[in-house]
Image (tube, rainbow, N blue to C red; front, side, top):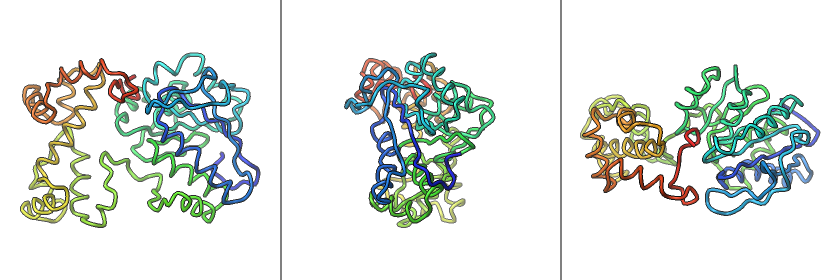
Length: 337
């Protein structure tokens, strides 16, 4: 376990797969760098590597320089895998075998965003709790039935730790610092980044980042969370209003004042945005996309999709498949790549 009090510096290998998010890399690495700076001594040492030693292209188009190729024999006390798009392409048999060898040598194993897929494909999460990006939780659970999949921001289970994306990874690394060096250093590290919204590991990953809406208008925030949890079976607006202790008219007024549209229109937008993400998985039939986003028929879904996005679901899918993933449009999903 690396999430426990320790005096010795922690040696970390950061394995960055091509088409990872630069923000996920920074959210994993920079808290360790800041902790060293605040403490005035090297509490954490790291080595950034890629599968073959070449600079890792990131989703924003910038290549990430690395110190060399991944060597399981030199993985250190912790191996953290950062992955993003097309993880099935990049998680080669050679790479998975190397990750397993690092685990056999006793390295703690981290999976950031789609990095959890790498650990799962290597068979290292069986019998454990884990998470991944919220878009892929359902597919992740279906692919790895021996893993207890949680919607949490991050999960620490024994020697394995996984996070849902960039911001949860920042929280996870603060938890690592807090576990090893105490609350004081973790708070001071967070303050370096003016980060004042630290989350618990068990906080559920939101589909919509509500920011300070909880403080400004908690009833609207509560309504949006209800909508998020019922995308495939939409709740009537009147039912949502009753659940948050307001009348339907009051809810209409609150939404208009806070987000500039009515709750029904906002709810429909959530469902259609979810459908658009699902369409990027070429293996999902359009009828299943319609069901998952709460539409009773594919015809109804197609009409609503075209009204919102100006093209049919099939046209959107064809266009998305023809655009380079570096432009963030060609996406077969973290699990769906």
